[in-house]
Length: 239
Image (tube, rainbow, N blue to C red; front, side):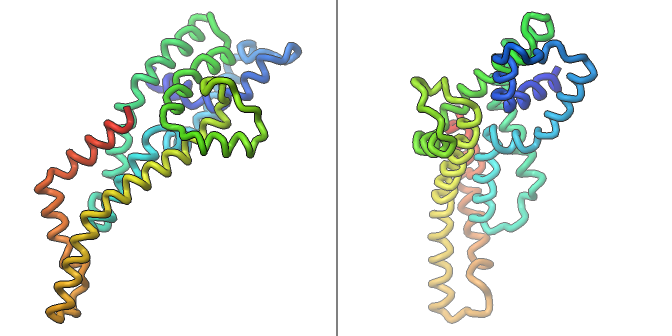
């Protein structure tokens, strides 16, 4: 069941193709495709799973913010990439679980029961995902991709096609994550500047200031319960 939810979630990206196939009167419906061909199409769509998880979920913002945090602390490889990616995945599942459940109940179950064709299920499954993405999409990014694609401006945000919403969401999340990363750097930058000024004043040029400031930055991060603050604030920004 979990694999089915994931498969449907990531098949949403071919919504435009499905709409065209459904709208054409002479085109064969996806519901008439044989079961082996449907399996092949599903497996092909699942090859896009990593890219879609990284770009069309909160995984994008979480991983960039955690990377900035590690750089600001100056710990280089601690926590490791595997730990940060694992944490980002679990947080992403926590945020996207209601969306996946809605897609499953509105699209996958009716398709399994024969109430919807695959094209209809894709169209229904796209609605919850589009609604979630639109909460974080900024107007300048939407305008940019509408101009690039020369598409007409829709009357409502919910009428935007996924080909516009998806890249606009990615750019919006990149901007938001860089803003959060800049704010994370500020307190640790102050510590770096203070340590650098002290070491230059006393003539300690043998040791790099970054090495001397690392324990103070870690101490500050532990004292203020940094993980709780960062993850808590980050998760609140995703709801």
